[in-house]
Length: 293
Image (tube, rainbow, N blue to C red; front, side, top):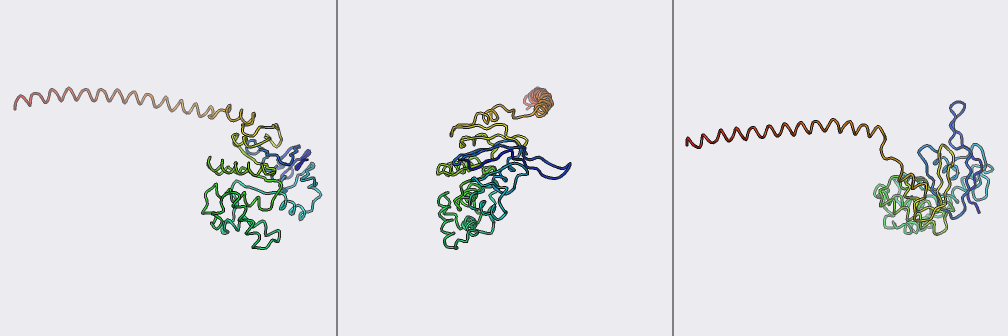
């Protein structure tokens, strides 16, 4: 059964001549329990798609159903309630409140459910234990490493027991080791039955996905089922076939090399003649002095 279903969904920003088409008749269906990676160049509409699916925005045209509910028919307070209970968000910049402890940050979504302070702190502590940073629950966000901060953000996303986790480049601000930690954690969450939708620019992270969707200029150009543990076929082409330098970089490098080589040769020649001449002068100058003494 489809958890997410988009039919000819478009999103427009602006008016008149300043209109920007962010999404162009997107069709997408995601079943419960899938682990979907969304890839594409910057500005292709990935974040706009995430905002629509997460009920942070509404489409300009088309039909969008989330958990079999037609989004266009929802009143704002109904959409807010479904977003609170159904969707968990993980952001690239963590978005933890700096003046609250990690435990308070994680328990914050439970405040809007009307849960008592004792229950929500206990539940938040259990979530932090689940992601492996319970020992940091009384720390401030500024006292955490990047990986720990993202783990806290994941715990906050899970605290309401959502059906869908939306992660917008969750490893974008992390080093390779912390990225692996976060992705392994998301993989464990997926194995427990959650549906995960994440945006990434890193083809290597498609190893964790069961499906990879590729976007370009506001449309989905390719949709590929993948095996967990291997890089998706199209992502592999992107990873291993694109040039790492531009033509201008090559020309600039050749120009610099041509300027550098003559100076090296000249300096070597000057060095040889400068060294050889003093040696001869030194020998002829020293030997007469020894004879006089």
